[in-house]
Amino acid sequence: MKSMKKLNIILFFLWCILLINLVKVNASPLTSCLSSIKGQTVYPNNKTFPSLILDENLYVNYTPSVLIYAANNQDVQTSINCATKLKMDITARSGGHSYEKYGLGGRNNVMVVDLTNINEITIDSKAKTAKIGAGNRLGVIYDKLSQAGFLIPAGTCPSVGIGGHALGGGYGFAGRKYGFAADNIISMEMVDANGKLLQVDKQTNADLFFALRGAGGGSFGIVTSFVFKLHEVPPQVTSMQFQFRRSQVQQLFTAYNEVGPTLDNNIVLSVSLDKDSLSIDGLYLGPAKNAKDAMKPFLSRAPKPTSSNFKQETFFDSVVTFSYVPPNDVVKPKHHPYFFKAKSFFVNKGLTSEAIDTLSNFLSTVSCSTYALFDLLGGTANIVDDTSSFMHRDSIYGIQLVGSDWKNKAQGDKCVKELNDFGKNFQSKFTSYFSYQNYIDRDLDDWQTRYYGQNFNKLVDIKTKYDPNNLFKFPQSIPVKG
Ligand SMILES: Cc1cc2nc3c(=O)[nH]c(=O)nc-3n(C[C@H](O)[C@H](O)[C@H](O)COP(=O)(O)OP(=O)(O)OC[C@H]3O[C@@H](n4cnc5c(N)ncnc54)[C@H](O)[C@@H]3O)c2cc1C
Ligand SMILES: *[C@@H]1O[C@H](CO)[C@@H](O)[C@H](O)[C@H]1NC(C)=O
Image (cartoon, rainbow, N blue to C red):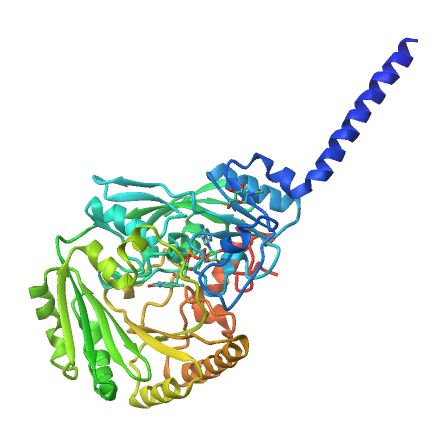
């Protein structure tokens, strides 16, 4: 009798376990594994899902299996543990500005951990540091920091996410004075493939500190926050805009090549060239009077501009000026999705006149609207730092060639092929071997060396140590040894 009762109780429990499992199966392994997430999880059947995966470049499109808007580090850890348990692919997205949509994994069916809501900005004015959540956009960072009298050097597009940006370099405002955004990272928190939260700085996990500052986008783990070194904002800066005759492009580059690299480090300049126009945008970290003096060595060598403008304003107003979007879109950044394809080159000796002619010829014959930007480097941007895997230190400028505005897929494919073919030839003849990993390009050959140079093998070792099963992968991620 007694044993019969025992058996009944056991049967009852077995039945309960079965029932619970049935319910779980109904909920799908993914949803039940993610049920403890504090933030939002959005699945493809949700009506808003398509709008949440638009991102910046419409030329490439992927559909993730879920978007997880992590509310805190714990959510990131839970997501990674679920990916491992369910043998699913996982990727981090901060600002969604990857040219190849690697923020969505660069393929379908990836779990995407979106960091938008990990967005604290805590400023320590005394120590001149700020803790910045990886989900912040540049526009918000410039706004908050400048209100406290500070800046970090970084890019000009306000909707770019600090996560992907700083991990791959990050160049723009104040770059010749303070280097790349990555150079100004003091420490990071990163969740690794085991779901462990790691402190990363010069002393702690120093190998990871090296890898993340230059090659950190997507390959090693999910960075949730940065501590940046801050720099004081000058009371006034000067934004500069110059227009030149398109026909004087050769003379302009003679000046750019010879004088550009030696200009005052308070200056950043970017030449813009398309088939019809030639102009320069620039910023000087100080008042207009000084800006004019500092620009003299260049302007006295360059052809006479058809228009020139020195505008003294606050640093944040210059951020708005060069964002080319309304001020409200700078502090509440939103995507401006469009179709584009970009090629990147670094130049360490200055383009020859033959190179300029070749490029000019391409710009007037390519089948979609295409322009080239030439970001002046030099100064602090060129200082070699062996605690960083960012290796493009001997360049005098970086070139970006961008094609866009095509009307349909066929025209787009044609233009992309033209850009790829031209890029390959131009790079082999006229520029250095290297390209910028933040302008990531799936069609680039030997990207391993072109992005990471002699650091590539070391990066593979570090990858193998921290992510031996290659959980964090995408079409151009650092591979494991093997
Ligand atoms: C319109 C536009 C303007 C730009 N202007 C500049 C510029 O002025 N200067 C410049 O240097 N660059 C510029 N860029 C390039 C930009 O720096 C890169 O596209 C950068 O990777 C974007 O970062 P994100 O977080 O917005 O992108 P995402 O697509 O979210 O991420 C990019 C890559 O980094 C990984 N990643 C993102 N967040 C994390 C994280 N928290 N931890 C680990 N990995 C992560 C992603 O998985 C992905 O592989 C520009 C890009 C665009 C589209
Ligand atoms: C769909 O996603 C949105 C977030 O974008 C969320 O607010 C909403 O509750 C979701 N709807 C369903 C049915 O899950």
